[in-house]
Image 1 (cartoon, one colour):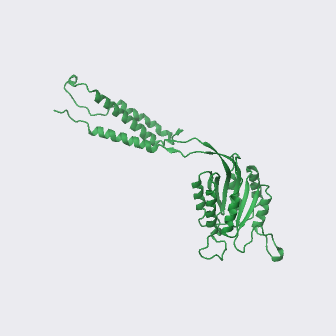
Image 2 (cartoon, rainbow, N blue to C red):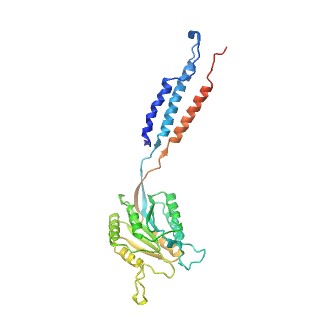
Image 3 (tube, rainbow, N blue to C red):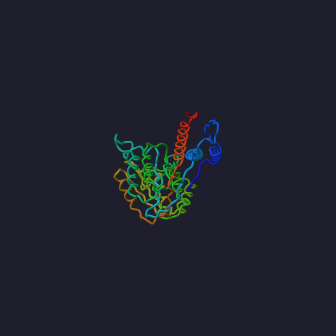
Length: 326
């Protein structure tokens, strides 16, 4: 489909009539025109130069208007899942699995997660992936796409040092919004990767519960726990004076969502790798999706035509005679 970005520029196409109405060639006086022999080749050349001038103007105007060709959406059928990777970008993700006792050179949790998630994406070429990062506020990284290069680039970018706190509610909400108005044509999964949690207020709980029900998505939570730290599966122990951690209540909330849910706890890069490998064994269902090819900018071609036409006209102008030969 052909389209333009700036339709108002098209009024300048009227200028293409100028070379057709005015020849623009140098005239020479002659004492008796009937004595000039007929020259059909020159007449053909003059017409060709006029048409070249008109074509040059048209090409230049189309280039300025932003002429492009937009491909139509193509439906693909495969097997796989819709997976939205929702990754924690809080400051604690820059620590190693050993927490504050980490030695210099230990791989930060964020880098380990990005490295293994990139392998996970590479091993599932038939899936559609989306990307959401969150700390104090969520950041939309990538909409659901089959473009493996774009997904892996987004995952690699998540390895940068994090900032802020862990606002899981905002991250989950943005992740679930990616499924809105899309047909359910395969497994839907929100893959949550974080090393902490925060209490979710009642309003956010109701919103997340509603979105999970509407979108029929499963939830997989990979919790990156530091050495000696408490995790979602550790219940409160009044005898030991352990207060219930936010992660524990969040896990209880997830269990009550009424959707397929699994919790993985990883305290080493190897444990994280095993968790991601288990997630990779998701059921593959028939998957239908539309892929729109990127638009093809035709402005460069138009400019090349305009430049070539201008050079031809300049060459013809330089070859004009200024006086009759004697």
